[in-house]
Each structure stands twice: as structure tokens, then as C-alpha cells.
Amino acid sequence: VETVPIPEPPGYPIIGVLADIDREFPLGTWTALADKYGEIYRARIGTRTVVFCSSFALVDELCDEKRFVKIPQTALQQVRNGVNDGLFTANPDEPAWGIAHRILMPAFGPMGIRNMFDEMHDIAAQLCMKFARHGPTNKIQASDDFTRLALDTLALCTMGFRFNSYYTDTMHPFIEAMGDFLKESGKRVQRPPLPNFFFRNEDAKYWEDIGLLRNTADTVLQERKEARARGDPHVRKDLLTAMLDGVDSKTGQKMSDSSIIDNLVTFLIAGHETTSGLLSFAMYSLLKHPEFYRKAQAEVDRVCGKGPITVDHMSKLPYIEAVLRETLRQQSPIPMIQVVPREDEILGGKWEVKKGEPCTIFIKKMHTDPAVYGEDALEFNPERMLLENFNKLPKNAWKPFGNGMRACIGRPFAWQEAILCMAMMLQNFNFVMDDPNYNLVYKQTLTIKPSNFYMRAIIRDGLT
Ligand code: HEM
Image 1 (cartoon, rainbow, N blue to C red):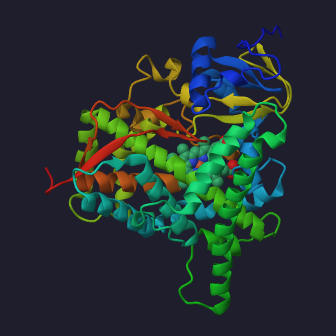
Image 2: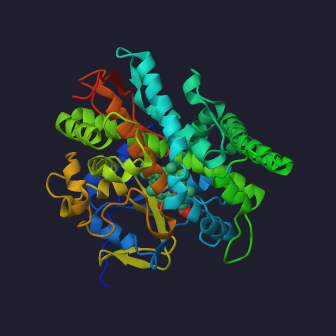
Image 3: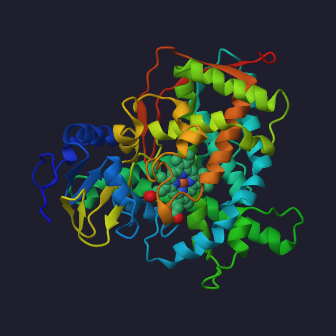
């Protein structure tokens, strides 16, 4: 095959483009490069290269699991310092992935998630209670309150632990440690090539944070084991139960304690910022587009009325689901993921990538490819994501939950939680932007969310 060189932004010797990457918002740099160089470019970061693909056609190729495989690189490889071969960060050849995956898939299935509804409802009600008590003039820091929701929900549903984030002014130390751990994991990849002692303080803090995360999970695990040993009648059935009791059908093995801890921490990491980002962006987008806001609220009023929201409502809110899908298209909280070629490969019929070279599936950018989403791809329009339209999209054109075997195990969990939370909020309040002129600014750790986005919640006096 005749190949052509992959466009490559000029960099500096040794560090490549490292000096040009926006420290606080690397996504901005990668997006600007995609705008400039097109659907594929190769960036040299220090001693490594990474290929970035942002058209549907190229992403479609990268989603072929026979040709490409996820092997954690760069930031995700750093996250392994905290959670090892947990589901998110495992290498394909690590047996702990398969064992955990097979044991946990059923627990994350429809029945498992349905059974978590009451606990999700409990936490969503706490969020709405807080909005109500603080009153209509209170500035709500949206992504903070949604982070509390996501984290409290995960901890409660997965392991019966209550962070009680709505009852404290400061976030649980676990939350801060996790945020710092993720941020530092990202920064470690972009370090200039200096000797390690330059980073002594950062490193000490990094390992302290990891210790706090793992100790918290270990405490929960040990307490559960003790409660079971005592025959405590109040012991719950949750994901932790599935992890303690589950036997892998293929190997006959159970999950080890350390694998349980890896995965408990993984759920909290993988599930809280993503879900919080989804809800924050969804509210931002609705508030920017009152016509869609009104339709979403009208659907909730029609379907749920003034009574309690139940698990049976969850499948009856197609417009809310379309809003969530469209939000994830425009604002994928995980804006990019990576795979590597199993062998030397040709992309797009002409660009050569080498076996093992990291290739980025630029999800967020691909989601605006006019070839799939048309000339108005940049616009927020939930109607394009109503089920009948959504089902017509080509396979691999909507990838906010990742791909194939390594796709998100928590998708049904996040989905139910997000539908419930949106419905409960819209049923009980009218929201306004605190600053009507606010325009989206991003904040990035391993995920993206809106920065400094404030809204206010005005309780509804009955339905309009
Ligand atoms: C994997 C997105 C919620 C647990 C992934 C991946 C994406 C993703 C893109 C693939 C990562 C990669 O290829 O490197 C999201 C989004 C969410 C969400 C957008 C919310 C809107 C959750 C929740 C949980 C969770 C609530 C836990 C309950 C996981 C795990 C994996 C994963 C364990 C790794 C799966 C594996 O490789 O076996 N997620 N996620 N996620 N997610 Fe989620």
C-alpha cells in the first residue's frame, strides 16, 4: 500500500509538543491541533508518540477489536498506581480483569440496577431537599452538588457506605484525595524529563492520596466481613456481596481482597466524575435552550405527575433520555480513550501506525463529525437523539461509554441514576442560571466538567 505521512505538529527536541500542552486544559490543545491538522495527527510527547483520530471513519476502524486493543497508556497507566489491574486499568492479558468482569456483569445487569433504585432515590431526594432548604436565592455550584450525588450513590449502592456529602460543608477526604490523585496521574505523564527528586513533594502527596483511597475501601471491606462473620441480620446485598460471593464460571476463582479493593475504588473513580459531568452539562445545555428545557419538564409532568418517582417511570421518559444522549454526544465527560494496534496497521487506507503505538479515539471531536451529525453537528438538539433517530446512527458513531469488551460496565447504573435525578429535579424546581450570561468553561482532570457553573432552584408551587 502507498502510505502518506501522518501530519505532525512541530515540536522541540527531547520534549516534543510537551511545552505546548495546556497544563490545566490539555483537551483544548488536542482539539486545536485536530482543528488545524484534521482527522488524524501524530504528536510527540517526550519520547513517545500518540496518534489522534477524530473522524467517524477512522474511529470506526479503531473500534475494530480484532485490529486494536486497549492497553492502558499514559495517564491510565499512572492510575494503575492506585488501582492496579482493576477493571478500568487492566491490561488485556491480566486474569483479574476476566474474573471481575464475569462476576460483575450480572450485578450491573437490569435486575441488579433495578434493585438499586430505592437507594438512588434516597440520595437524589437528599439533593432536592438541599436545593429546597437553601432556597431560590442560593447559588448552586452544580458540578459540586452532582459530584456529591454521584459519589454518595455509588458508595451506597456498591458497598453500603454513606459519605453523607449533603450533611457536611466540606467534601469527605476521600473525594479530595481522589481528585488530587487523578489530576496528578495526568500531570505525571506531562512531566518534563527531569530527575525524580524534582517531584519529591508531589510524589509524597500522590502516594498518601492512594493510601487514603485504598484504606477507605479496605475498611468497608473488613467491616462487611466482620458483620457477615457475626451473622449480622442487617447485612446488605449489593455489589460488594457479589464480589465477596461471586465465583467465576470460567476459572472457578473468586475475587481476591486486593482485587475487590481495586474495583471498589475503580467504581468510585470511574463513576463519580463522569456521572456528575453528565448531569452538570445536561443542566447547562437545557438552561441555554429553554425550548428543550420546557419539553423535558413537560414530559416529567405528564409521566410522573406530582407523585413520587418510581422505578417504573424510568423507561417512560424518552425525551429525558434523548437529552442525556445528546449531552453525552456534545460533552463526553471522558473525551478520549486509547487503543493500540495489535500489528502494524494502515488507517484510512494510507496512514501507517506501528504495532503498539497509542492511538487516541477522540470521542468528543468525533461526535461532531458532519459526515454523521450533519452541518449542525455543533448544536445542542436532543431531538436528533430520540430513540428512532438514535437507532439509525451508524455503529460506533456515538461512543461516550467506550468500546467493545472494554466498554463501560457502569452504563446502566449511570443511566438510571441520571434519568431519576433529572426527573426529580425538573418535577420539583424551576432552574435558572445564576449568571444568565455564563458561557461554558471547562475544567479537566481525567474527565471534563463545567467550571464555575452556578444555577438557582426555585421550588414549584404545583404543576404548570
Ligand atoms: C469504562 C464512560 C459511568 C465504571 C468506561 C469507558 C468510558 C466510560 C468511556 C471506557 C474507558 C476506556 O476505554 O479506557 C462513562 C461515562 C459514565 C460512566 C460517560 C457516566 C455518564 C460509570 C459508572 C461506573 C463506571 C457509574 C461504576 C459503577 C466503569 C468501569 C469501566 C468503565 C469499571 C472499565 C470497564 C472495563 O474495562 O472492563 N466508562 N462511565 N462507569 N466504566 Fe464508565
